[in-house]
Each structure stands twice: as structure tokens, then as C-alpha cells.
Figure 1 (cartoon, rainbow, N blue to C red):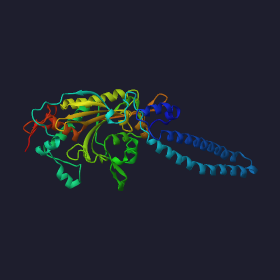
Figure 2 (spheres, rainbow, N blue to C red):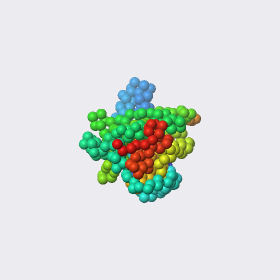
Figure 3 (cartoon, rainbow, N blue to C red):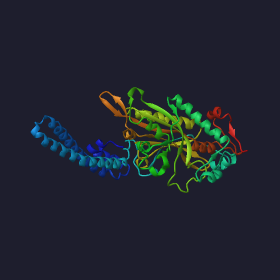
Figure 4 (cartoon, rainbow, N blue to C red):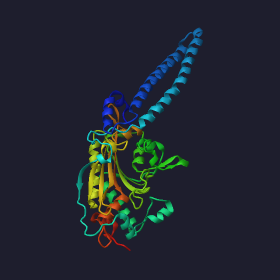
Length: 419
């Protein structure tokens, strides 16, 4: 949620920032509701003050005047009883409307309306020079016998996959390799819950705008998370963090669940757009004065992992119109796939500034009071998609796939061959 005080006092600043997103519907309505809320709040506070004075006056009045003082206090209490529910209702209406307003884009974010306006910052690593016709990861995986999508359809429906044999060892190796790297960088490993209450989804900005994308367990009123960012951020909700302990860095490993709504017909086979996948996520609670330094650290870790795995990639800066609602800035790293002959997003890094912290009320104590922290997240390894990039970039003419040198101590083998 954005700072309503900023919207109230400097609406032109917010409007200018939203113009980079192509404008945001609902901003004027929030301003109107905020004015109405503050007027009603003043009315209620004045009534409460009057009621308090009238209540005190009862005990201070001479006996002959007490009935009148009691009647006056009762009349004010009745007015409060009629006015306070309207204030509560208006508070809910304002909060609901404000929840749809996205974060303000950082000044470095390029303007634009769609993914076509995203900016390629640079390319790293050349595409492999293959002297044979490259296969895509679906053909490679089936030839190697490391995943089975057809039987998963029988069991669970489309967009599910069984990972088998060397594919499982490859996944576990990627997880341990990534965790070891992040621990060296000061991240605390964490396996968080994947079922959360609604306030966690709301607090991280995934609700209400993207509620259609996530699975709900109706019987328990819980939601399956699409990233461990949700439960890690909510873990410290309503807490005040000591300034000296910031940044707090977590490396969250979890299964993730997404409905992939709106992707009908896209990547229905293989490991790219599956409903269930495993991921290691970097998440940091940072001091607001140092969050952009933390952002660069998260991005550096992402590139270190991709380079160690010998995956060619490009760095893509998201334009304002392609930002998620909570992001002040987002940068993707996309792997080149020689078999599919296209780029595929492997990781993304987001600085949400104080957007999530305001919803979750995560603060740090400073001299003179408290201040909202900044929250940041960045994929370290989306396992399924990383396997896709490894298979396609390390495939060989004989149908085998090589294992990058950095990963071999974890796999215990240097190649995967067809059975």
C-alpha cells in the first residue's frame, strides 16, 4: 500500500509517477474517500471529547443538575453509537480502494506500457555453438527419461510433471548448490509454510489484484503460496526490528503453486508453466536508506548462479507498465534456449520499498520513533526452469547432456545419458 499522506499532500507527485505506468484507475476515488474519512474521523473525535467532558461533569455537578448532565452524556453516547459504525465502514471502504493502488515506480524504471517496452540492459555469455540440430527440453527430457508429463496428466491434469531418476538428483543438487552459495552471502536458510492466511497474501500485495492466480483451500480458509516471499514477509508482520540487525536475509526453499491463469495454450508440455514447482527465493528486510545496495547484492547473487551453471542470459529491466503491483523496480534474467530458440525468464529481482511493510506493519526503531523497513525479493533458483536451461544449453549430439563443473560435486556425475 502506498503512503496515503503522500497522496493527500502531494497528489501531483503520485500522479506523475503513475503516469509512467500509463495511469492508474482509482487514484481520485481514494483521494475523495480519504477526505471523507478524515472529516468523519474529526467528527467522531470531537464527539468523544465532548462525551468525556460530559461524563466527568456528572460527578462534578450538584445533585439537582445531575439528571440533566446524565441526559446530556447519554445523548452524546447515542450520537457516537450512530456515528462510529459509519466511520468503521468508511475505513474499510478506503482501505479496500487503496489496496488496488500499485507501488510508485523508482525513478530509474523506464517508461512503457507492456513487455515490448522492457529494456535489455546487457547480454552475458554467448549462445552455445552446436553443430547439430538442437532439441527443446521436452524432447530432451523424454529421451533421457528424467520426466514424465503424460502420466502426470492422468494423475493430476495438465501442467503437472513427474520428475524421475537423474532429474531428481539434478533438482536436489541445484537446491544444495544454491543454498551453499547463499549461506556464504549471509542468508539464513528457511523452509516456510506454503499454506497461509489471507492477510499474508494481502500483506505482500498479491491480493486483491491477483487473487485469481492462487489456489484456495476453502475448508480452512488458507491459500497455497506461489512463492516463499509471502510467508517469509508475513513472518515478521507487526514487529519492530532492531536497526542494527538489518538487513535480515533469508533463503527460502519451498514448493510453489500457481494456477497459470491466462496462459491457455502456452507451454502446456514440459517444465516451464507448471502448476507446482520448487524454488529458492532470496528475501531481505532492509533499512530504507540501504535497500538499493541490498537490491544490487540480490542481483549479483542471481548472476553468480547463472554464470556458475554456464547458462547464457540477458538482463531485462521491466518498464513501469510491466511491473507487478508491489514493485518499485523489477529486473529479470532470461536464459537463452537454443532448442526452443527463445529467451525464458529464470529469475527476477524486486525492490518493493515500503509497500509490503506498510501493509504488514514491519518497522525498525530509530531515534525519535519507528520507520517502515523495505522488503526485497529475488529468485535464486526456480528449479524447473533452471533444469530447462541446463538441458538445452548443455545438450550434445549423441543425446546426452553435460553437467556444469560447478554442479558436479553435488550430482556425483558429469553427464546424463539416454537409458
